[in-house]
Amino acid sequence: MKVFLSYAREDRDIAHQVAHELRGTGHDVYPDAHWPQDIGAALGRADAFVVLLSPDAVGSPFINQEIKLALVSKNLEESIVPVVLKRATQVPWILQTMQPIKATPERLAKAIDMRIKKLRDRARQ
Image 1: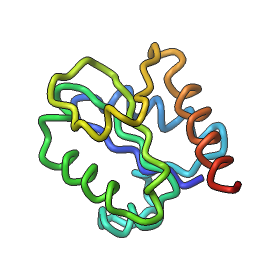
Image 2 (image 1 turned 90 degrees about the vertical axis):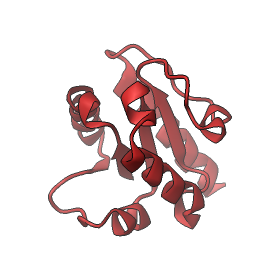
Image 3 (image 1 turned 90 degrees about the horizontal axis):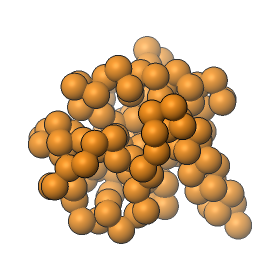
């Protein structure tokens, strides 16, 4: 699947680790060189939207814009995966209703991969 990975620059190290592991399981992960640079075009290409939530992420106007774009995107309406890296008090309420993933860093990519596969299987039904 084509996965748009949204994260704050302060969470870059874990985001790169997650992206690497997801690529290892066969996912095509944004950001990457062959993806469109335009956020709207990249979201339009994605099959799933994964957002890594932390105090830095929820405080970022860029991350909040990506979340808003994902929420109104037809191709992502059933494929948004919120992931809690660090507890944050300002998480958008809609993401809290989507069963956010809370996993240890060692199991994070595995948990995301399992959720993406579950969403894909549900979409095929």
